[in-house]
Length: 465
Ligand SMILES: Cc1ncc(COP(=O)(O)O)c(C=O)c1O
Image (cartoon, rainbow, N blue to C red; front, top):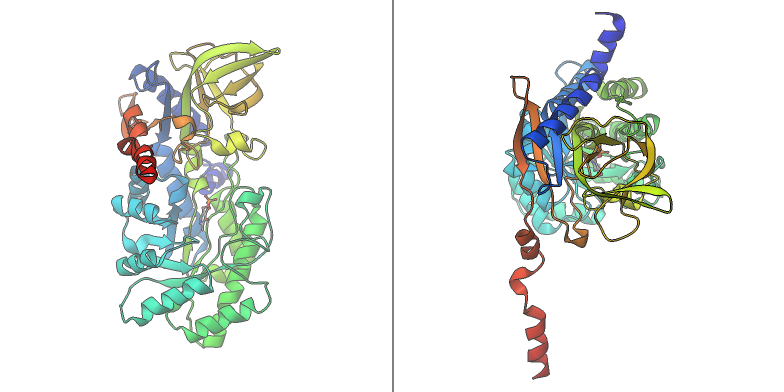
């Protein structure tokens, strides 16, 4: 192996070349096997081999820089792809789960994720949710002083818990390129803002008064946060842990939860940045983080899953308006709300396939790729140069495995598409497994109050009596 190849493997980029081939095979096989067609005009596809490769790259990257024996839990941020089989796949790959709601906690449990590999981080946890987490032994990071008082009460009721407990801090190191995913701004709603007057001293005192607090947590932000800013936030959190431990005269903070936030390169197939780059930067900027004195928790979401998901939608019609060519497809705001509402921040690459699922060839022409929803802005891509899409073709929205089709938006009562995992079948073909059944129209009605059709009319009748 040349030095370059060794480096690539260490960086987790080794899968970049093969991923496209696997995706093309899967689209063709989805058509051949009837998962996609006139009566199933949209699906979400998940590349199981790719997901495993990313999980392995993450583990390798941190193991490469940490002292042997360092306890490292990579807790997948379930919000990025809240599907039970996905969480089970990652559990089997040795990862944990970071959950931010009672629903996500239940999903992680349904996936069989062990409590000791689960971290509960929501900003608005109810008392009952905290009680449940402590009863289960799930790690909890308190977001603010009021939540800490709830933990105080639970800890002091004498109920023993194996839950590691910590506080989420906000190092207030600033924003990245996308405001909505920047959590370390001065006025962020998350955690205890360390630069606010008296806040740092409050945290140090709070740990001194509560020997059961053993963790510090910070998540600096998600897409659009440069590595250097992530590292700065982690460095400040580490420095605070050192201060707490110096004041306590013991290693009270034994674990640092450094959150997730590695950005995904939505502009091309190249994995950039890589977990290895981030881990090496952290080792350079915060060497003490990896010297074996601290256990580590990470909470990556997008960087683990985005690349491995593809929404594939049939082109129902093509038309032209005002000189603009438009392909009207079945993928729009319901599977890609961020891209549709904030296209500048969340552009997606689109791949064109013919009706048989073969990559469409042809000189690119400028066209819009529109969704099925009833507003003009429901566009997956606007003015994009692509091989000309024809009626019955397929448009694939790439890199949608995190925060896209897993998190359906039910505008226009558009049904949730089926999600299928795919993997090579060992015979040169592609095998699929149902991850989530396509939602039926009857289910849409049921979750839209179908069982309560006369609830409002009878209420009015009884009021007027
Ligand atoms: C607390 C916390 N941890 C982890 C994540 C996952 O971030 P990402 O998907 O960018 O890795 C998020 C995302 O919102 C988060 O809020």
